Length: 263
Image (tube, rainbow, N blue to C red; front, top):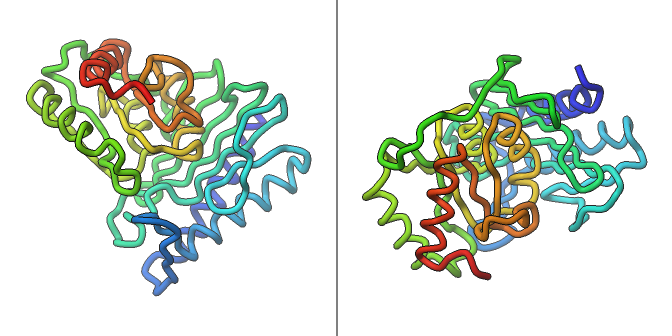
């Protein structure tokens, strides 16, 4: 196994072990912003992951949801960490939440691991090396018609600046696709695109730790990733479209149609 991927996998597994140790316990929950929760488990998982990575690669930079604050890419190696993606799900015992660890180097994703905790689904990818689920190669779907497509999205919950326009788009898509799902964890949504469960995914107000690992898994599975303008500003740009080539193109056209792509 690629050494960077091996380290990313062990880091994510350590985070998962911490998260599982809090499941079924009376852990502390705080609200760090409007509808934005953080738990003891988030902080403990992040501490475990960062400590392990700093031990292995002390000179690497780190961007993590709760503690580390690097806000841009550089030529240095950057680890992007989400200790629990789907914290609200975790807090309310809704069984979809993930630990995500990604490595970027020279401005591009290099290695990625996303683990869905409850089902122990381990999604991995390396740049140029393909995407895998529990060591099995995966690929995006081959559906081309929107009418047969199942989409994933995330409804606005903290940033409500586009909620009215977003719901108009949601209504129009509902009329034209097979269905739309909202699991509540963007890392999982993206991995569902990579594994062909979803044909496409779109969301806004996402952070780098929501997409920094899973987007590589989508790409290596043959999918397309872009921002809402069809460009590359999706890591820090907070707006993302993912999908197989046909459904990605359709979602981009629909977002442009409803004038949601501008910022």
